[in-house]
Image 1 (cartoon, rainbow, N blue to C red):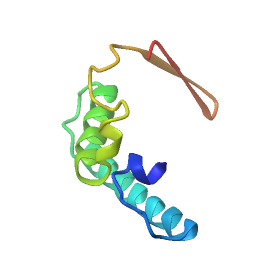
Image 2 (image 1 turned 180 degrees about the horizontal axis):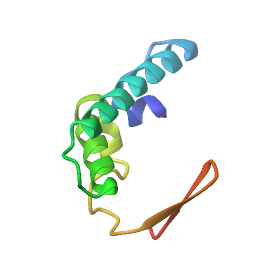
Image 3 (image 1 turned 45 degrees about the vertical axis):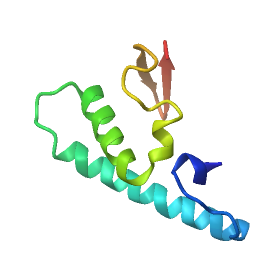
Image 4 (image 1 turned 120 degrees about the vertical axis):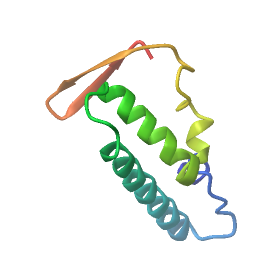
Length: 92
C-alpha cells in the first residue's frame, strides 16, 4: 500500500524488497521536502512552506500521494496543534 502511495510498481518483488524500496523512496521524498522547505523565502507562512515543499517533492518522488489527498485546497482548511510529541489535526 505504501508503495502505491509513493507511485511505485512493486509487483514481483518479495515482501522484504517491497518494504525496502518503499522506505527508500519515502526517504528520497522526505529529503527533497526538507530541501525544498529550506529554499523557501523567509517570512512565509510555515504551513504554506511545508505544503508547498511536500507537494513539489511529491511530484518527483511520491506522485501517488497527490492522488490520496495532498493536493492543496482539496479538503478546505484546517488547523493543527502540537501536544508533546503528538500533532492533532482539526478540520481536515
